[in-house]
Image 1 (cartoon, helix red, strand yellow):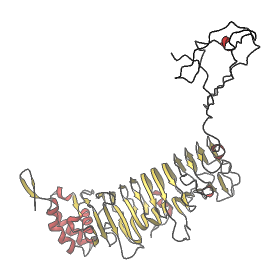
Image 2: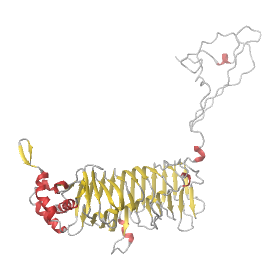
Image 3: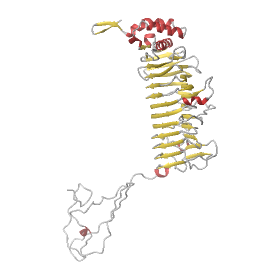
Length: 523
């Protein structure tokens, strides 16, 4: 087939690729080495421009949700691995709209030796839900759609939905001793029941990972992002404290059950913007988690320096059940910071006053915990590994405590009085029960300044009882109040003195109907 461009006919990229790669998809995949060799052979017949993009439909993928497309994705990855030049990847793998069934583990990404370390691998879909990869291995446990064993850095996934059709399968395993790092997920989505979303293991890097405008759905037997898988040959678990710098921005985190972020090791995490909701409950209690599902779980106290840092900002949480926790942190140092977050959406529920969605185990050196401009439901729980009361470690600035007063907001398990927690300019139930609006005035406000039609002397004069002159009645006392927190100003007219005889005055003109300030000149 030819494509016309300004009167010149030439072969389209898709049809040029299809001629050789369909045969490679059926004959060259008996082993990964054969796939790479076939891809290299094919690359010699393609121009450098054609090597930069490969579409899985050119490799035989159907995308109907029923046909097994594993082979096409394995060839696409082999083609990308063969295209590395100077340590840099040169191939973008395109996945058009459709439902692509994958049954073999590691078919999407199989980063193991012999491919040499490389930087730059990109998967581009048509859009969330438009491009869907359905992962259905024969067994769930231990089956990963992707694996990177210290081969690739700078990996990007864009506009793709990943769905587990085998409960307990996992999306990505990343093992690193220094190479695997710099992952980016943009406008992606996860659905189905997974064991792990992304599981990190090794001794170094596995760092600098970013999620932008992604949706995390489905459910997780362990966690969506789990940092701390152990591996044979690893002597010190804290070696994984080199796993650092994870940024999650504008996320829609709405899944059924499980943990979102779980970091036995590693840290330095920032979550900014988004909606975080756990919609259901774990189907059964487990020894490690019970029935609890947690957004942020940091279960290990001891870490290296610069690891224990967590920041959450501009996030709306929903605590729909007593088994939902926002954070469960056992760090013995570092910082935890929530800024402009709200978890009060279900504060009207009967159970809300008793929930404890924020829990900390604190020691002499922290962690230092701060909430700023947050709206908080239930109580917060603080515990200590010893009965020694820590120094001041927690501070709440300009927060709304939805269900309790500052005196009973903190549950101090084994710590005695919670004098290590400070509240600054917070509003609690003692103040929210008062009216927040000033009372409506019952009459018109007084004139500001003397009216030109009336003087103070004439307002307080009264004719003699035997006189035929009109009688002026003393005005009622009036009061105006400014409800500003910085100024309260009250004006009261003086009480009338003894009646005096006054020169008869002309009656006042009627008030302008445009004004409630009777007798005031509007001009």
